[in-house]
Image 1 (tube, helix red, strand yellow):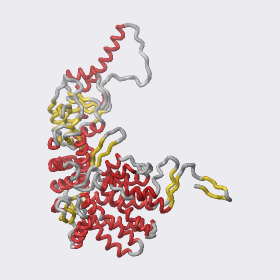
Image 2 (cartoon, one colour):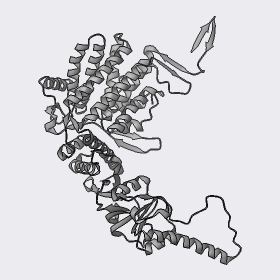
Image 3 (cartoon, one colour):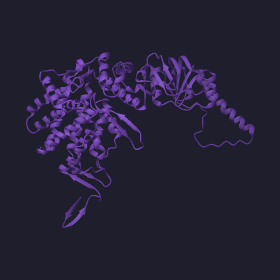
Image 4 (cartoon, helix red, strand yellow):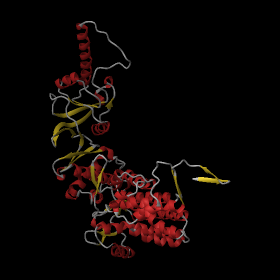
Length: 554
């Protein structure tokens, strides 16, 4: 970038910097965002395909989950990174609908590109998109249906929809039951659900059907000493965040020992100190010790003699879950150990699961923390099941909190598209064009569902529109029977927040990318490919083209 004063060029930017302006910058950013949307588009819906992602060290991830795909892909283009942020936000807020959010954002930009070619100003498009997004939020709230927090059947259907197409079909009924039971167990009185209290333990071996729910906490640890009991009934549990070892000095101190008997006295004193610590634990009445730090060898011996089951180096998150499940307080000092700090559970037992020892803390009075043990034939199956369960747990908890759901299968998108077209006519002016573009963009969801199922997208869209024009608001695409169906009857339903969040974040990302008219990339930064390279990439299909991207793109 140079300014020319009196024939003498003055360089403002560092050598090697790139600057792309105006339409070129917009084209480049829009093409990058569309490429990201294209990468995940084929995974949408019950008949979506999976992606195999191989990282630099050869680790393989096979998944259908939009946000996982985008996190694993090594994306460099700044506009493409914004699309990844859309998926991450959707995942953080709702847990599902990540592919939907990215695909809608990509389509909004594609439609905006057509308007830019008709010389509609980006600010006008941005204004129209904001109006349309606000109106869409209202429309979703109008078509949303109430669900009660204790309506197990409906919550099961919501979990089912979230898990469909994610490799969990074989034992979907069982998994849906596990998800709904675990969410209803950890829900508080005010219907808030913290899914952190639902722990998922993955174990390779057995089949998906062997997955189970444990009303309590399962810790992937074993007893510290073989002389300790394997089973403790009517357990009094002490949660300790302090090492069961002799205290070391905070400052550097030296002890000079001049004779062997002094050394023996020193060692005896050390043992006495440890014995005193163990006696404090025994005196509290605890028969199970869960320690976040280490337990000395001598202490292990004394604890085993006292018949106390002890485990050490337990994660902080597990300590929090145990505290909630058993009612114990986490004690941070040996001197603060009292009987009132202990928690209770009916049974603490060490069991073998897939050849590994694990500690089961069960039969708690009020298990507000539960564990799901997920089993599967291979590591990749278990990992994908874990992702499917995470999505299902989040959407069910969101439905319990908001008490609202909408039909799935593209039904809300077609309904909103029709209503937004009616709304556009009332706005008038150039903003009307942007609102109509927004309405058309929403139809990418039913269109993609049809394409991924090998159906004719145009025929399906026409049929869906006629159903909605006839007033059937919950008509969505049944990809198995290839016809529009009432999604409420079919049991394909999603929490309202999946849709509101997806549309809000997709619209925000599209508007932000549209408003950029100048990209100044310093030397060494990913300035992105040129418009010519982007045009050459325009026809690439899904992930297939990702490998051939210019260096600035990925």
